Image: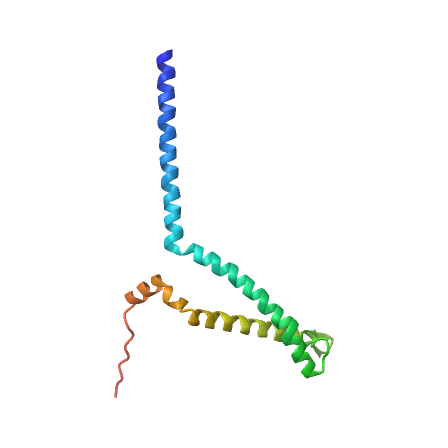
Length: 141
């Protein structure tokens, strides 16, 4: 009976060591994935992008729209401008405000990437582009 208990304990210890080894390998693989795929940079970019979007939306809603509305003679801003077509109302002011918001965000992202030279950091993209054969055009007579 004692022999069975001893073998059982040894088997349990061996299984625990294997489980720890597998968990350690999985954690190492996850850390490698995070480093190689740039997940941290993606997360930081996502968070900063959300914050920049909030600031720009506030700029558009609180500064730009009232200025445009004032130029149009609308004290409440451009967002309340509507076109009435028959019995339907088209919220053109809201669309214009969203379009301004998008344009400013796109410009901030574009110039941010260009000024900070973030487009040069994409090593994977450069490797993939190196594999693509160049496009050559043949000019005929």
